[in-house]
Image 1 (cartoon, each protein chain N blue to C red):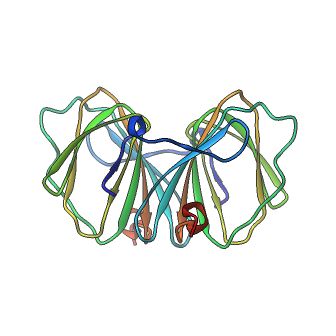
Image 2: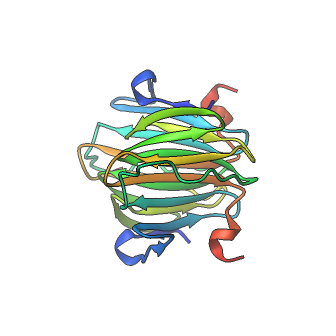
Length: 112
Length: 112
């Protein structure tokens, strides 16, 4: 893979106003996720996955729901998600960009 | 770990004008690395590590040296580094922020 230039990449739609593009090795993946549908009136439905996740808030502000905890996060903040812990995001700004890192890689994002 | 708020975190110095702060689970780590010593006249010396790495350019521009390839990268671009491949960065702007994701986690960053 080596490099993934934003200008040469077509992010995939993952819902109305939301896109994702990826960079990955065998065991670590970064998903760059843009939310242009915010701010949201309520959080997305909680979801979970067996993958470990560490995320960086690159733009905007969110309310993170992690299990039963709710935390207001903004640019520069990080959060971690252990396997199978339900989590959800409510966007608080018009645009939000999250940098989501996963291990193992999200093969479901690759259609595999 | 859960959340790491930038405003409540003291990044550690990793050299003149350079700092790092971390978020991690058992198997994936994000290091937020700020370079405030740029632009640099030449690349840093190449380094390598057995960890797989995927990085996101969050601010600024860099020249990435990956093996023998040199690539100009800017905000929004990604790059990947396979285990033990020598790589180096030359900062091309006054400030650069990289979001480096690793598996396994960099225990050397934890002093372990």
